[in-house]
Length: 500
Image (cartoon, rainbow, N blue to C red):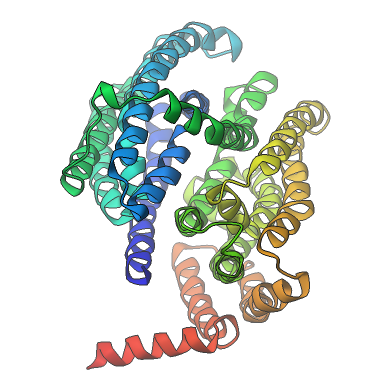
C-alpha cells in the first residue's frame, strides 16, 4: 500500500503541476485574446459548470466507498451491482443537466448583464460545457471506480495529463482561428469525451469480470447508495456554494469585469486548494477500508500522521502565496489586477484554516460518519451567501471575500477537530503534540524568509531564486522537526538504496 500511495501522490503532483503551469500560461493569453469582459464570462461559465456537476448528487463518493470495500472483500458481484446501478442512475441525471444547461444558456445574458456582442458566444460556450458535463455523469462512474475504488490514481492521472496537454493545444489553435468563447467550450467537450472513454477502457482491462448489464441494477443497491450519497451530496453542494457562488454575487452586484478581478484571486486560491487536495483526497479511500467501531487505533494513526504531513505540505505554500501574491499577480497579469491581492489574502485566511482539518473531513467521509459535518457545511455555505450579499453592498469585492472566509473559519476551528478526535478516541494534547507542534517548528524559519523576500519580488528571476532558497531551507527544517524518526529512517534508506 505504501508503494501505491507514493505512486498515487507523485502522479497527483505531476498532473497538478502540469495543469497549473498550463493554466498560469493560458490565463493572460486568454485575457489578451478575449478581453476582460469575455474572460469574466468564461469564469462565470466555470461557476455554472461547478453547479451543474451537483446533479450527480454525490454518486461518485458512493462508488469510491463501496467499490473499495467490495474489492477488499472479493465480492465482485456486489461491486458490479454498485457500478451498474450508479451508471444508469447517473445517465438519467444527465438529462437534468441538459435541461439546466438550456435554461442557463437562455437566461444568463439577462441575469448577469452580459454585453450584447458576447451574448451568442456566451450561449454557445454554456451549451458546449453543459454537454461535456452531461457526458461525464455516467462515464465518470468508471473514473471514480478506477481512481478511488481501485486506488489507481496513477492510471487516472496518466489520462488526465495527456488530455490536459491535448486540450491546451486545441484551445490555442481554436483561439488563433478566432473561435473565441465557443472555442474554449469545444476544447472542454473534446477533452471530456476522450478522457472519460479512455478511463472506462482502463477499468475494463483491470476488471475483466466487470459488467454493467441492466439486470445488475438493484433497488437495494440504489437505496444503499442513496443513504450514503445524501450527505455526501450535501457536502459537495456546500463546497460549491462556498467556493463558486462568489462569481455569481459579484456578477449580480458589480458586473462581469469585476468578476475577472475577483476571479484571479479565486484562481490562485483554487491552485493552492487543488494542490493540497492532491494529498488529502488519498485518505478517504484508505479510511473506507477501516471499521470506525473496531479500528480506532488505525484511524487515529491515520488522522495524526495525515494531518501532520498535510500541514507540512500546505502551510509554507499558503504563507508564500499570502505574502508573495501581490508581486505574483503583477508579474503574471499586470497592474490592472492589483486589487486582486487584497481579495486573495482575505480568502487565504479561511482556506489555510480549512487545510488544517482537510484530513479530518476525508476520514469522516471515508468511514461514513459525515452527516453532522455535511449539515454544518451547508449551514456555513448559506451563511456565506447571506454575508457576501450583505457585505458586497457595503464593502464591494472585499466584502464578498470576507463573506466566504468567516463561515469557513468557524467551521474549520469549531467542529472538525473535535468530531474527528471523538471518532478516533484521540486526545487534544496528543493531537497538538504529534500533528501541530512539529509543523510549527519546521515553518518558523522559512516564514521569516518569505516575509523578508516579499519586498524584493520585482521579477520572475527574484521570485524563482527566493522560492528555491526558501524551499531548500524548508526541506531541511521539515526533515529535522517535521518528520518522525521512523520516517527519517525510511528516507535515509531510500537514498542509500538509490546510491547503490
